[in-house]
Image (tube, rainbow, N blue to C red; front, side, top):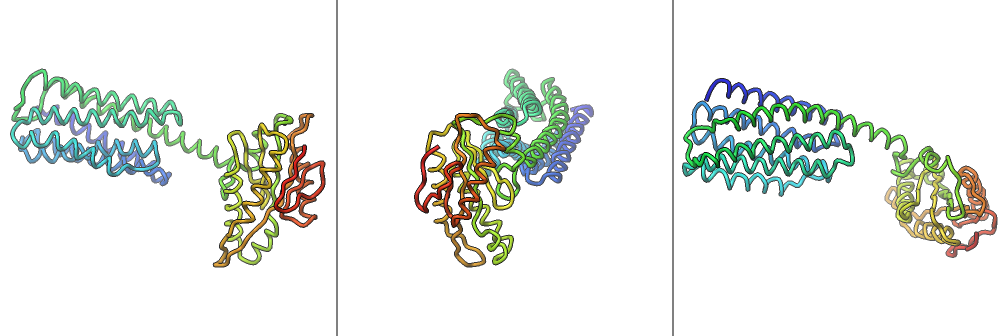
Length: 392
């Protein structure tokens, strides 16, 4: 082995270290992205493996090779686990450990019995498989951020191909026993590809981080932070620019005696009640329906493609379900209620603001009539508790 080869190994170690620092820095900026920590751990193990392998290059002692194999397989398995964690939000610990253990089982025994050529073939093949697997995880998630994730996928695949070439050259040479670290054009190419890929993945990881931050900011701008529902601004962004036809209904909800809950139990308990109601509202949304928190204890539900009578039935179902919930506040069980104003769709298209105003007037009629009931706009007759009115 030449000094140039060792220099390439050190350059690879530096490149991997820089990528690890990049991922760790991104994690510090957004600590919920735990896949970055998993990736950082994998790169630290790989850098350690490179250092152990450089010792083997200079002094081909089996122990150095075994240590490098263990570190490499653990590190690349962690990269695969990080890719899966990015896709699903959960680290598959058992699968990651199994991945590393399988790679070690197929590569280390041949090394221990003297067939180091066969061991390096198995090692390169196992690493290539883990890299292809990592690429596949990011490819499956590409819809979130197409440009950086497609680039990361391509670089992982390119790196995997370089390891396939290393295994292929060893197979072509037919040497099952080497006595030294492999030295051929494929090894040199693989290191060069790895250095370039590490640099590229680092740059794309930063771009991905910024992409996710921007997406999160956009989501925060349209989401109510307490309940996770859309906020008033988002509701008007979605429906405020057009008109609503006869198939669209608007429901406005207001929690009864909410101020007394805050005064008696505190705002934290009031927040809990709001979350419970928001969950009931979300549970009654179909595809195409929209639930939003308008502010304070007031919520709205826009129903799409409704048939006559459906809006009242949905309102009654939500009212009844919420009234039946036992909510524990400061150790005390409470039952809360909600009043509802319903503005069914009209034959004449109307703007969202008009329908909200109509539903709001019906809501306050329900409040004045005793609360815990629904009221139809244009049919200002209270709907008795436990029954839903029908009509347009």
